[in-house]
Image (tube, rainbow, N blue to C red; front, side):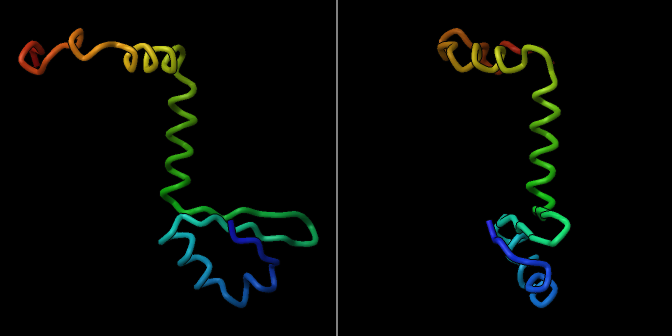
Length: 82
């Protein structure tokens, strides 16, 4: 994470935002009134998707159960009727 103050951020906003977008490097901006964090749109969308999936009841348990299921017990593509 890039840590900076608001004055330094203003001076190099383009470079810092480019770093955030290209390398998913969050920016923590310190101000006298508090701090703010800037993240890339990709990271934001990932966080929102994670929050959404976390809100689905028993999804975690279903995924863990699926991970523990042997491949031999899984249904093949030939058995699925689309």
